[in-house]
Image (cartoon, rainbow, N blue to C red; front, side, top):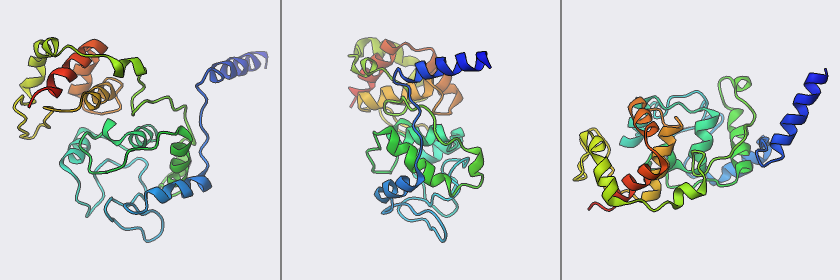
Length: 232
């Protein structure tokens, strides 16, 4: 009993340092979801609209709703094995481009962790196995992956990025052509950095990209972002 009491004190001390878990409120989430209804439906008789229906979204492979026409980038995410879990949905709702770079979802994201927790609690009601989905988790993401703002503020050296780029251009074409491999030429630097850190933190599922990103330092990612972002 004493050990449990000590553990509870330690957990409280850690959570009071800013890492407080958000608790989802499904009733409030239904109101937050009003921002989504022009594109998505959920519940009885839900159908695909501009976006796919969201019934059973938890545990579903991305890009897998029958009859919906997905973008090439969402199809690639599906082929990589992206599954909608609490963590990946939270990251996608905060910044859709953190997981799918050229998603057609024209939504800037929900920046408040409580809003995301509430909407996920609401969608949880329409999951096949809602009891298996956590109500909430600590949400300390910046644009999807957990990033120190200083990482986004790094000014990359494009010359160093060009030096590092040979491993990238074995698959990604520097001229911007896209033949089964998405183009990364002229990407905004912030989008590039967020995507690479999403691979590094294994939010994006592609195993080769996870391995490559895992070997890169913050400065090297910034340099590559500067180089590819500057290509015409």
